[in-house]
Length: 79
Image 1 (cartoon, rainbow, N blue to C red):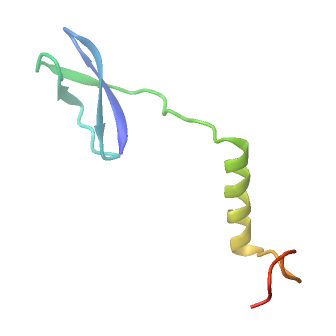
Image 2 (cartoon, one colour; image 1 turned 180 degrees about the vertical axis):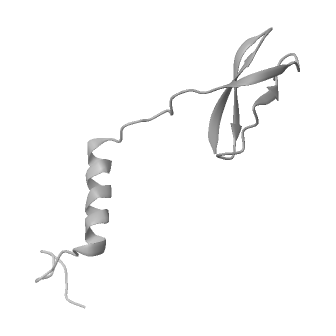
């Protein structure tokens, strides 16, 4: 789902959440029902926490270059 911004001539900007790529050029205002035109805005990008970014990067690398484990973890029993 993506958030699209529209501009109502009476009420100002308003946001609508729709499936990506389905936003029409005009949408009725959520407050006054007048048609508002779609505004093209920059996508909302966010940064991941460093620990999560690192975990995702390791998971991505392991698809092509899996880590080789040569021994059991300390304190575990062999299966």
